[in-house]
Amino acid sequence: MAESRPVVLVTGASGFVGRHLAPALAREGWSVRRAVRQPSGDAGDVVIQSIGPATDWQTALVGVDAVVHLAARVHHQNEEHAVTIYQDVNVEGTLHLARCAANAGARHFIFVSTVLVHGRSNDGRGPFSEADALTPRGLYGMSKATAEAGLTALTEQCDMRVTVVRPPLVYGSGAKGNFALLARAVKRRIPLPFATISNHRAFLSVENLTSFISWRLSKPDGKFEVFLVADAEQVSTPEFVERIAQAAGTRARLFPMPVAVLSALLNISGRQDAHDSLIGSLELDLTKAASIGWRPPVTLDQGLRNALSAPET
Image 1 (cartoon, rainbow, N blue to C red):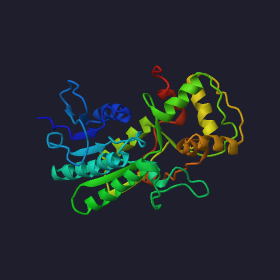
Image 2 (tube, rainbow, N blue to C red):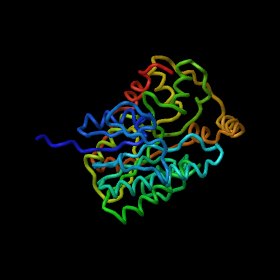
Image 3 (tube, rainbow, N blue to C red):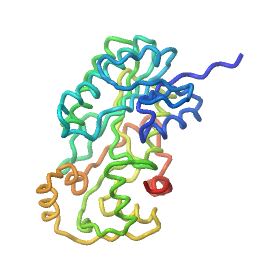
Image 4 (cartoon, one colour):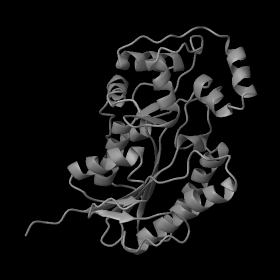
């Protein structure tokens, strides 16, 4: 009789990263059980309509060897009761799932956090590393940092290993948010006032993120480990725009605007997050991820070509 494949539960499986990760893990020999919000007709899916401190995970966790927790509240920090919602989903929901997974016998829990637990910019200091004290910004970053602390405590009470992954902006086919807006502007040849920005920022292709998660699942070590993961190249905002344009087969239309003026305009418009992500630096020390033998298999240019290969929606 053939040995059965190990089972991994992927939450947020119908989201941007999940749609890339689930088939990648299946190709690596995992039996992937996708947690989805709506019935899909796939026998391997389990419906989890909402994540919180009382979610029933019993059926989803039967026979599971590992969990990859992608699902999170992300883009609604100004909604009514946002503090409570982020606490319930990103903190209590994560910790409740981890406790249930440990009780069900799962051996490994991978939590996809965010580089925002370090802050939005490392201007005036060296690259962020896993050893730095956390200085999270915004509800999302703070909720992820709190969940990380809870997972640290949980590992002291059970045998399950925990890996925390802190990615920067993740781009790829089907990405939403800031990357989709930027790519759309470049494709449409919209002039952008970024020519004089001089910074360095880390980015992460979704292929490289899925590669790292797969690597950790196959080579777990340590009781609680944290990793910063990014593409090998860390480039300036105008360079990133130029590389998007190259991948799209066009030319970027960048024009100079004094950084102080651009900064003031973004602040006046209430877009502090855009200010930090466009003007500030976000450099990461990737030594630890390299030390376990992992290397990003996809270059920045290839990742951008992959990202722009899908039709615009």
